[in-house]
Image 1 (cartoon, rainbow, N blue to C red):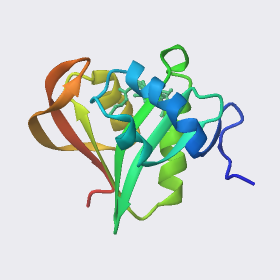
Image 2 (image 1 turned 30 degrees about the vertical axis):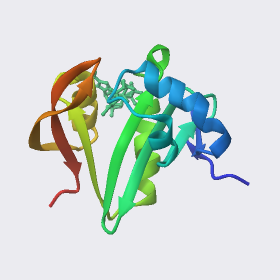
Image 3 (image 1 turned 90 degrees about the vertical axis):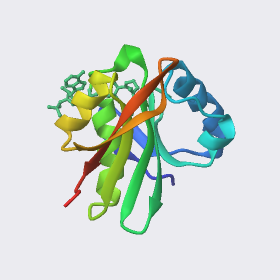
Length: 144
Ligand SMILES: CC(C)(COP(=O)(O)OP(=O)(O)OC[C@H]1O[C@@H](n2cnc3c(N)ncnc32)[C@H](O)[C@@H]1OP(=O)(O)O)[C@@H](O)C(=O)NCCC(=O)NCCS
């Protein structure tokens, strides 16, 4: 049986290899930092079982690096981003969580701050957001 997490509304499980192409199309549609499919495919991750959202990450020692989190626009603000993020956090409650987010992505910054992340460092011209080169914040949870 696959692992199933989430809420009564959202069923979340680990991303199987056969689902990655379809999730990558959602990733591309959100116009975050441009990745090749091979990069996306190599990450660990969870997804919502009707393909409305995903979270991908890498783990090393005491740290989890969240490399992507996305929810389809028509179901944003309905708790799915939070369910995906907390599925991951509940698996690794003692680790520190890091991510990078464009300074212009104010919705995502507000979302992460609501989930207890704080800005810890500014990285000038670090990546792309909506097709434009952008400064990024490094944000962290459980930093101290
Ligand atoms: C950022 C994103 C993942 C949030 O997911 P979501 O499903 O829309 O967010 P949720 O409905 O789970 O919101 C969870 C909480 O964050 C708050 N929140 C979400 N968006 C917010 C916003 N724009 N402003 C203020 N608070 C916000 C909600 O009020 C909610 O609060 P609660 O903890 O009191 O319940 C989603 O908007 C998204 O995919 N954006 C495009 C891709 C992106 O920017 N990804 C992040 C790249 S680093």
